[in-house]
Image (cartoon, rainbow, N blue to C red; front, top):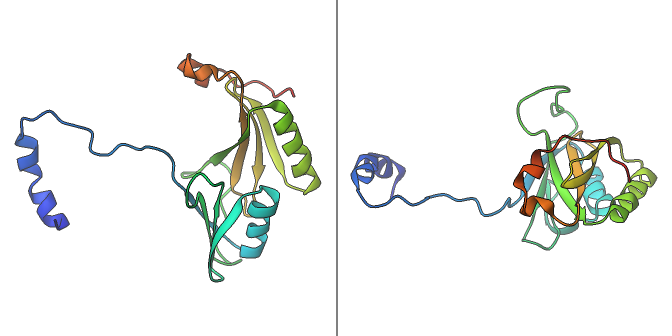
Length: 171
């Protein structure tokens, strides 16, 4: 049905007395698309440093990566070195995205050592009660949270644990 007809039929839908069901329901976060200034530099970072598997190329302008959970979770699109960079400080839009890298502090410690060896900028760490996290910046300044779920997953039984005060990370 064309969008115009769909919008015109809105009043008829609202008059319907049948029980309403949720029309749109998010099932999971599917993928993230990032503009990058240098495709090769970003491919190396996400592929070699973070270990995502490159699953497809879009010529010189794009590359797709997946952990194997779905067809792709990350798409990089090159916009070149002259593109406007991410403004510093408080701004609208994406703050960071999180990537689960395991379930033990040992896995997080190993990741930190690997990141340091690779010269990756670590911008912070945190104990969020339900996760232990390290925050890094990609080559274009996008912030990424690498985290492990603290075991047992207490948030499943106590959802309020998610909003517990942030504490310094002690590994």
